[in-house]
Structure formats: structure tokens, C-alpha cells
Length: 68
Image (cartoon, rainbow, N blue to C red; front, side):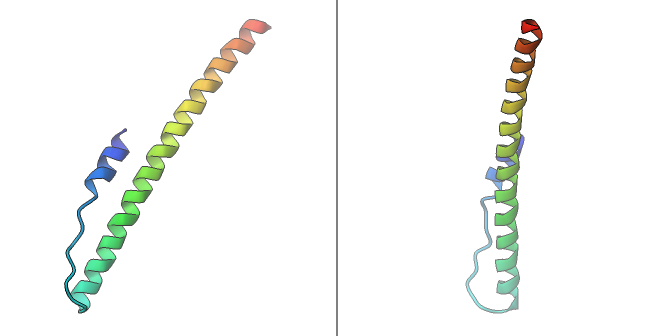
């Protein structure tokens, strides 16, 4: 899945060594990257689940048409 491939690329983080304003910004950027990574994985998982359920519905709808 494309989204998981992109999420796997979001593993790099900024090294933080201090406590000044720049380091605080780096922490925020790292947190944002982590948030994006999790969101991309969640979207990919949901997409996979939806595709599976659509396939099941297609199969069931085909069976119900044949029964009638």
C-alpha cells in the first residue's frame, strides 16, 4: 500500500541536544512527523479494511442474485 510505504519513510527525526527555542521547534517538528506517520498508517489500515469489506459485499450480492 502506498500510504504505508510513505509512512515508513517518515522515520527520521531531528536530533535534539539542548533546551533553547530552536530545540523546542525541533521537538514540535518531530511530534508533527510522528503524527503524520501514524495518520498515514491508520488511513492505510482503514483502506485495506474497507477494500476487504467491499469484496465481501460484492461476493454476497452475487450470491443473493443467484438465489432469487
